[in-house]
Length: 445
Image (cartoon, rainbow, N blue to C red; front, side):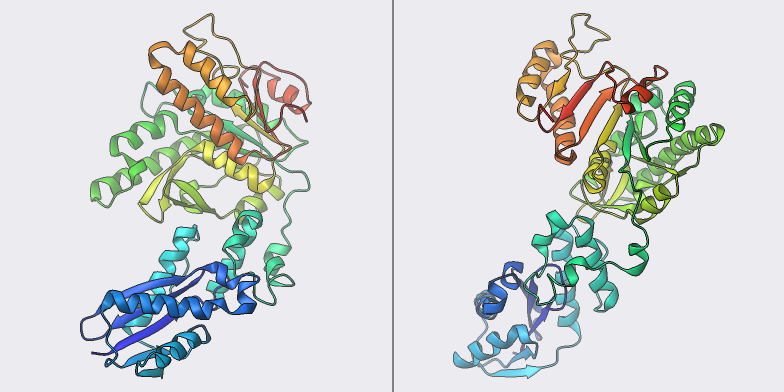
């Protein structure tokens, strides 16, 4: 029997290093990962990855019952120096080798899977500049959260790589004023009781109000309403899948969401306001239903050019389930965090969040302010006012509020209100009070 040992990821700025073990005759394959912490200070300078690599290989040998009379071909890479030395010391026949062929393919595939679990999408399985710099760009998109996945022990990480941006991105610095993000709820722009039915008069009214705003860059996100929800539920798209039926359901849902987006875009054209549709399905990759990556470059350019970018909740690619549904609320708050939006407005068909449905219960009370500290108290009030549907209503409310606080910047504010009354949006942007529910990370700012 002959055993080969190879590595992948040593030259990648993101993630650890994969070690693959392959027995040629039986085609048995096993992989382990040297954790990224071994490539961060102070471990990297202490070369702890050498001992860790040896530990993982010995563990793999025990799993595969590798014997000392089997020739062990080990890649000549630096990260495996400890493996070659340690195996030789333990009596194995070690042969330094340039690894090619099947094992190299398997190890690279394991690396891609590992990076996908971190949320890094579409990394090619070949080495090269494209892979390296795409990873740097991914870290830069959310440096504060993603730097922990980087090999920060590299000598040029703090001085150069941490701040790297391609020349074309350096020329696009985005709007000088952070954007206001407006979410039009699906129940506002569509009749949710009838499949694929838009509220044309309401859309034109809201677009007219938004188009009148001149002092703030605006990003618009709309819900799917009756264009998306019926199909998403019919095909259970949030669960992903591999069947042709589900894939056709994806096609149909994206088609319907595009139709709704075109209706809204036509309203902006009628209002003589530059706007552009950016399909969420084309720029988002998720990981188990949560956004892992959103390519914002086109959005930034259009925003900087005085367009209103229009996005929506939609079917998106998912690195685990194949595809899933990403809600408009999740998109809004992801954008709010990355773009540090000072204000997020959720346009509802009621003027805030209530202790019960104000359309059905005249005693329902509007909740004027919610903070993380008061959220549970608010949810308790909602449950008391929701009667038989208390659990569903409370959990639905909890999901919405939690989503907002996940992305809301420390100094930002989210407002849930009804924008259909002319002048409401202008009053909000002027800092005036309107009937609404406000959500802040702190009760006082």
